[in-house]
Amino acid sequence: MADTPLAGLRIVVTRPQQQAAGLAQRIAELGGIPLSFPLLDIGPAPDQSALHEFVQHAGQYQLLIFISPNAVSYGMAALRDAGVTLGAALNPNLSAGRAEARHVGLQPDLQIATVGQGSARALRSLGVASVLAPRDRFDSEALLALPALQQVSGWRIAILRGDGGRELLGDTLKARGAEVEYVTCYRRSQAALDIEGLHTAKPDAITLTSSEALAHFDAALGERAAELKRLPLFVPHPRIAAAARALGWQQVLPTASGDDGLCAGLVAWAAQLTR
Image (cartoon, rainbow, N blue to C red; front, side):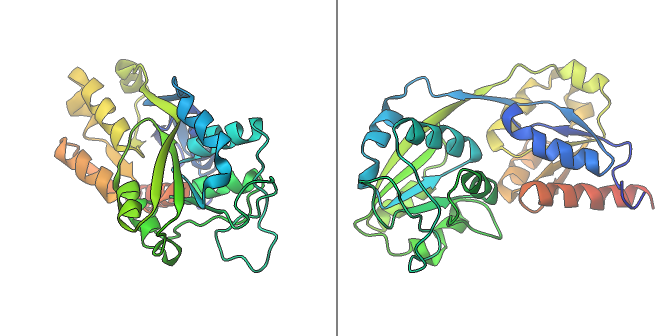
């Protein structure tokens, strides 16, 4: 049991299909049974004009911020298709978070940043070795607190993200004197949900990583709301936890960020069950 602390427990993974595999694998390695139940679908932005405009003028930016792994996937693909390559940080004189830009025309000290470590790992897998990202808490507030983003007056910054989202990051950087542009790379849409099928699968716990996904899930519960809202709900951010409690979820268990945080929370909860 020490090697499989989640043995036999059925854990719902609600991430979009493209992002669910890593967490599902971790749950399975811990002995749990991952139940895939994506709440949101991810696809290309229907209007590609902002993305096309961005790649055509990529050489004008001092900082690119990728909000999520999906932004990395779609944004980097668009850059690659346009012949723009962001290489590894090869210049030892560059500070952390600066990327050596091999493509002629890019700023020589272009900085690359992300909100979370998942996005940073996605960038590194594509050859961008030096990425500026918070290490303890993964949100806009944590990124904005980093010393490298305190003096950005005169910078041109692109924030690559999905359709919509919080404006705090852009608003704060503008207040610090930067010129900020949002670049819509992909679209989030509400997935069709089989609530009865989920109930029939007899889940023991649910993981949930998005306030938008929470709202869609909660609205779809229907007659099963009372039963499903009694299940432990594991969320990696206080903002999501507060929203879930306000919606009447009875066992909201905040965890640390990322797959590591969610799995640590699941393991600690499972240990209590066996006592």
